[in-house]
Amino acid sequence: MIKDFAVTPFTMYFDLKNGMTDEKSTTKRYLSNMNGMFADNEALKEMIKEEDILAYEFYELSLPEKDSNLLFGTSIVYPGKVGNEYFMTKGHFHTILDTAEVYYCLSGKGYMLMENPEGDWADEELTPGKAVYVPGRYAHRSVNVGDEPLVTFFVFRADAGHDYGTIETKGYRKLIIEKDGKVEIVDNPKWKS
Image (cartoon, rainbow, N blue to C red; front, side):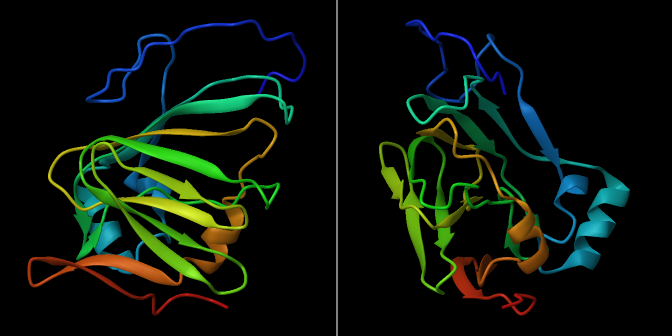
């Protein structure tokens, strides 16, 4: 992140269907970057041996990390499953825990899976035109349950930071899986309180 410069008005292009822009490069997360995120780690290892598939990527603006600035970008989660669990983002809390975030679905079909340290959790469906408000204190993860990329636009305060470590060590309380051809939300047997 750039720490200190004056921000002037600007415009940035994002394709409304696929979330891509030619003005920045993406941060890419392959299945090999998702070790420990899926319930079936053996299925994950086997998939990586065959091909290290791109699970998701995102564009994020670089601005000074000040609470007066907003960061925004797009997240693209590709279709697929590890075992019966749908492809997803790693998910994160914000370093400034009380930070809220908004996601607006541009294309695809999925869910925003959320949970807070107090044990509350929620899932909100993502379909084109729906906006999901993620309150402060909630970790959040995008899950693609469709057969095309799930593309969302997001915005949050620039100094919020990202805490991926908590999710990497504890996991999520819930998983979104396919069972009998339908989406189902189940308890995560590997979740650590």
